[in-house]
Length: 105
Length: 158
Image (cartoon, rainbow over the protein chains, first blue to last red):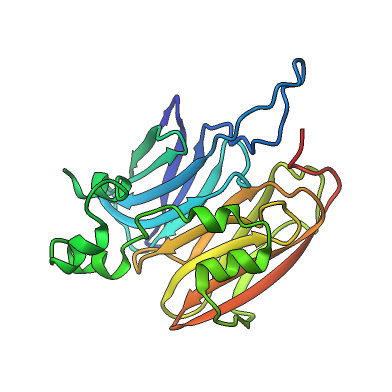
């Protein structure tokens, strides 16, 4: 599934679900300056990510601002089947949340 | 409130631990419950050892070949360095990824359940050539592996 928050792809590989996600987010470190105005760009980053399989959390991540902009995440769920759902939701340090979900073909 | 919403909002009101001890969470979640708060101090630590201590206490980490860190030998763009960490240890619980040269060494933490393979790929920012360090809690112990990455253009400044 693609939406304004990013992209998720999940497919079965030898009985497991291989998941790849791109989250749309600037992941600002707080150390950069605006190129024209020199004004500091405030820190702004995704800090928590929850990965779910059929609605149950299977992995959680805590991130800092050292994760690249528009974060990429790949992981593998053990044992999956067609029709299963995989979702990834995240919260940033301004308490904004977003999520992506897909169903295994 | 849905359980997953509750997890995300762990900081508000009741703690996850309180719920777990009251028997309100299923056993899997109770055993593997993620920490309900983002580890603020560890992410703000400017010394690698300090971050490590905040996360894992004074336990020493045993070097192992069972943790594989895959990353380019030379990264042309330090803003986006692909890193895949694969853990081949029994009962992996958590993984911390750090860089010894970043102003704030802690990059990411992953909390596994038995429902996932202990393999995570992300892309990280490296300000300079650095050693990546993976610390893994597994099988009741703490383990470590490292990987050097040479960076030709740093990714932490403007």
